[in-house]
Image 1: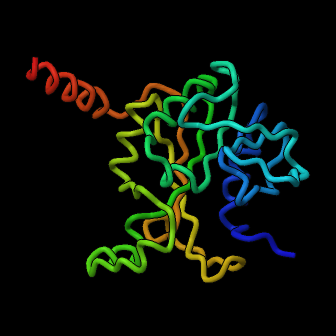
Image 2 (image 1 turned 60 degrees about the vertical axis):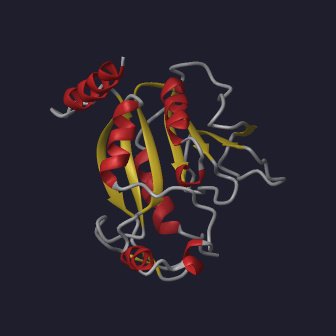
Length: 210
């Protein structure tokens, strides 16, 4: 039987499987990734009765509080379809940064706020569309980039997950037009020339209030 949303899961797994070491799949319980390989640990606030065959262990934990892992101990973190549900996404990003090794990879999949049906629903304030899910946030690319910068990540790439015609069939599309996108980031000081400017602007603005 074909895996639901396999196009997206395979894209995530292809990047994760290129790295050796420990992999955390945070928020995995609704959609485990059967294509992940190696030392995979599932982390979620709810632990299902059936353990995915390719996951070595499952741990109950909340990424917005504290993960039960040492600092600088994890090689890859997968966060699929989670950050848009969190009330405090910055706190979660900082906690994931803490447990990742320097140069470790964060693979974060989230809905594309520029997906054409989403844009149209926003324009006409289609409340019926809004309440079909439990999302709290949708992040424009520039906001996600700043969030990653301020929490210790350097954005390397954005990949598209296409358009889900059904749960089991996805139409490939460029990331700009995709329904969901994957942010590929590393735990590193951002290299972009604007990073220092963004940090100094925040500092200067707060200094003016004193």
